[in-house]
Amino acid sequence: MSTSTPATLLAQMAQSARVRFAAEAEWARASGLPKETLSRLKRKASCDWRTLAALAESAGYRLAAVPARGPGDGHFPEHFSRDDEDRLLDLAASGDVDPEVWRAEGPAFFMGGFAVMLASARGFERERYLRLAEALHPGVSTPEVFALWLERTPLRPSRFLPMARRRRDRAPA
Image 1 (cartoon, one colour):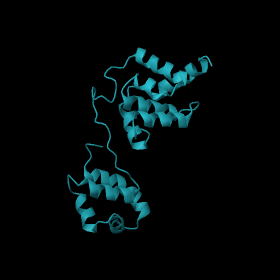
Image 2 (cartoon, one colour):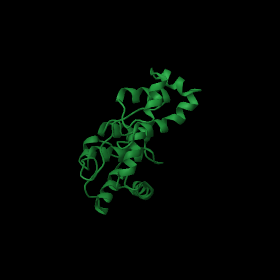
Image 3 (cartoon, rainbow, N blue to C red):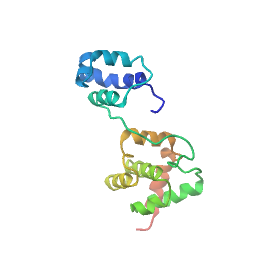
Image 4 (cartoon, rainbow, N blue to C red):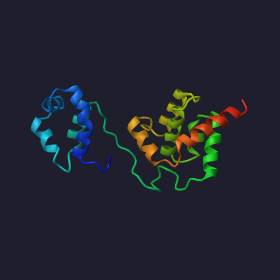
């Protein structure tokens, strides 16, 4: 979202706003803004945070600060191999949700997203893994932040989750 302009963000929020309000003027009013401000923002390259947040809230959105992209940014492992994947499969199969154990396995944002991914999978205890995710990196379980995690993670859920289920099913009780 860091490369989005106010116009891009407004266009994304406008669909929701149309459902909530009969006209843009009502959306602006519900946000505590003059209707002219909303009209001007569609053409501007920048906008103050408070104005954008007010429009987002009234449209049913929430603005969130998310980690910056890029390898070596500290949010994801710099390198990810099959051995790393195997370690995570063992961790998933163990059922261990101790945040300290998980922190030792990788960057907090990456590991928090991994916990959210497991929480979304059949056979893993959703509430336990969501609590773990939030303990590792607060906010990672929100849809917006998790979507960014999914975009950037070296893990491929469609490949990883079936392997995690099989390994968990074979793990000693």
